[in-house]
Image (cartoon, rainbow, N blue to C red):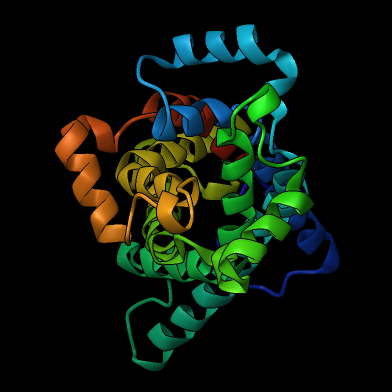
Length: 292
């Protein structure tokens, strides 16, 4: 009988090739979906004031509907792989923690929510080696001026120009804040999902494999909302650093400086600029990823 349990949190029988394919497909689908409205979030974080609706209206009016897909080629190729890496890495780290629990005579080999957070965070760090440069290129393409002021013709041209100005290390600009965001964000994501699932099972007195798909999806969607609510300030700083100029045009010396300037000009509101599109995207994307 097919189950509704998320494949990455299933305990602990060996996963066959069909389950691996399911994990990869779920990760890729979630990764592809999450880039499609991302330009509004990036514009709010890096350039404009006002609401998400006004930002979207301006993009449509000045750049046309195709602009909402600006910078999506690299994410379409890379973000699906990134999410798949997260799921695979999470599965591996979860098994290590289960073995640790078993060796240390814990009452159960099952993970605590703190351990789920650590496993999710470690998976996020593993993934950041790829997600850092992928998102850097995407953000530059999405934040660049339109028309005659355009800086890059596409992702390859963007990567070449970054390397030409800043060397190969330039591709990894903002990597420290990326590591922090990935660790904390995906730690929250996996731990929140497990926490919501445990609450649902306790409330309904239902085994996990017997829960309907829509309830699993709701838990996944709420976990996505928790991810962005608790990691969005790090994402704002990352976007600011990765859209910043080079050389004499560089505004932010480092992550700390970016936080200081953002706080001095916008306060707490500045650290949550673009949260609306992030939350709007998070619910369906995360719900679909966990329920697939």
